[in-house]
Image (cartoon, rainbow, N blue to C red; front, side, top):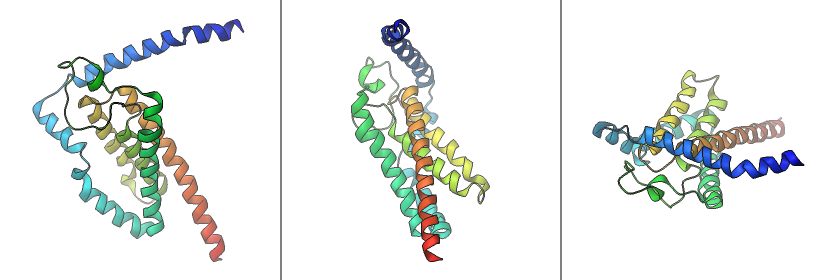
Length: 199
């Protein structure tokens, strides 16, 4: 019981330390900037910039898995987005650095929606896709792991752009990877059930 009380009493202090470290890391990553890099991350974190890639991926997934596969990937992204943006962000209510820190102390680029940033929706969406794509296609396409690098670049861009703390991104990546794994299991079960009925 004494140990239990000790842990609870020190929880606020631990959270304060974690928050301080998170903020310190944010400033290190956010204050290292350049005009050319700004332009790169403005494009990299923009949905419209990746439209050609999305079209190519839809074609590739449909060719390999059919429309059921395309629907699975779309559902994965929707679930990841709703989980982070609609459920978790209001629950934790952690302000974005650009909404909390003094004006002028944050290098802000790109756009964002809402005051809250934990967890990052960009991170959860991209990592959910990356995990699902890798799990399904890792034996078929050698380049499948590259989507984790793609997700990392986009997620880092949100820290660089001043709209997320590093912990927001790490949490979003964890949420996304978990959803990607769960959706892969669900897809496997659904596929096996369809194959069984077909036999």
